[in-house]
Image 1 (cartoon, rainbow, N blue to C red):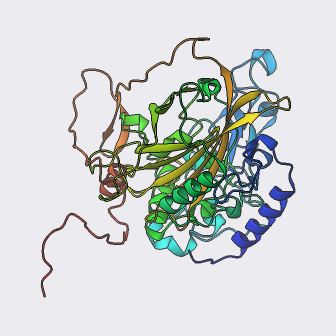
Image 2 (tube, rainbow, N blue to C red):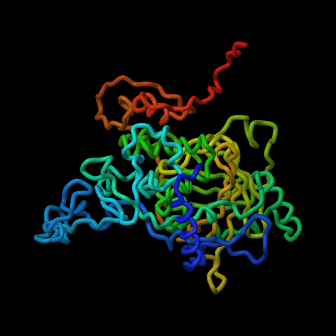
Image 3 (cartoon, rainbow, N blue to C red):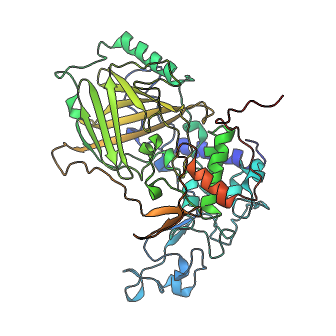
Length: 486
């Protein structure tokens, strides 16, 4: 990406200095007693130590100041809690929500020179590519704040999208804390290095029923800590800097339509698959149910969908196909996973994934692979309290270099302690009608287009209905088998 403003560079340097100075939550870093070639590197920045940067309204249930549309100026009535419903204001009415950000809708932050053209005033984001690296193009908002902009907590203003509020231009999650700290270029290299390391210092790569760490089996609470992938603490250009040019364009396309045209296409709206990387999204999963056996470790979680990871111990990938795999040479929504033990630490490799997306996050390709490390966490007395989950993501099509997410699962009980896992089913009530998500009651009839689920169906809807007059760069059609004329 081309820098057309030094704001991004100054912001990144300041963010890194502040974030590193902030105290780390000790449990965020894996507990390891030796220096490994490919696991256990300390977490550089604790996301919980950084502020939410996007413009929004938070707290209470009274809506934005003034009780009117998001961004309406706060008046005396709003300060007194009038014009809203709830328990905190006058006569049992709720006080208004507080604005989060640097400038509410319709205003500009002090000391910031707005761009003449930004995401909220542009009629063609493709033509603005040179501006994508400037946080001001997104008004210093995160992808999540832009996704929320037209909701009750959003800061789009009463004449959106042009009145969208500004997030914090003085904060960001540093890129240096996102990219992998390890030297490997591929998941295979990483996997082989960890296996070689394990052979040198450990005699345990597989367990029996007598030695398997059975204390892992149980239920783990939802609170696995804040991570950069939650995207509330990160400027959009920082996320874009992780991506190749094509995938930068995909992310800006989604961000533009969520904030400018107010046309979102979320997987859950249409009961579409959620995809592999949704497992790391805080809104998509709650409790994790883990079962450990010598042959397989199973991890189940769900809210948006059922996320079931079967880790097959001691298996080896077939390397003859498009990507490493176990079964047929056909990609799977959540991939296929193999693993081995390093004493009481489980190391896994996932491959053969179907490329997809996470809304307010970036898209990824069929080449996405991960190396994941599950390490036990112990308290000061040595008692097992949960698991550290370190994941390194490799995708040569989507990512310019590997990235890492580290989080923790706190064990909350045994599988028999509470209600069993509730299997999720999705019943569709929202349909893409004329390119926009539309709730429909039973008995409704409309013209339905069967979308290509493997061809970015969300992108097709935006391009077909909302980008007719935009100058979209031509993409190579990989399904065109015609021989070009000489």
